[in-house]
Image (cartoon, rainbow, N blue to C red; front, side, top):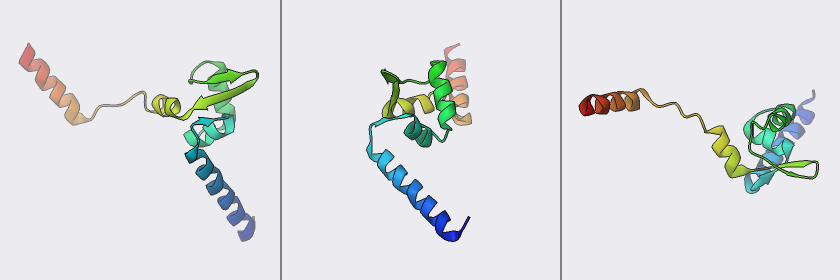
Length: 93
């Protein structure tokens, strides 16, 4: 790939990311870019109802806030939080 083609590709990606950052609803490709997944993985998650989405006919859409919630759904507590919970448990029992 030539340097010019590489720069053009990077500029196109930056442009798409800027457009996505201003939107509240995404199509499959935009959701994939937002989440850092492939479009085929997004379609598979839709098929297995593993990701929050909306359908209008055969088109699939995603709400940005719901994707963020889905992405952050399995928070892992810090060691400090676990120790605090254990300390609180000991005090109660």
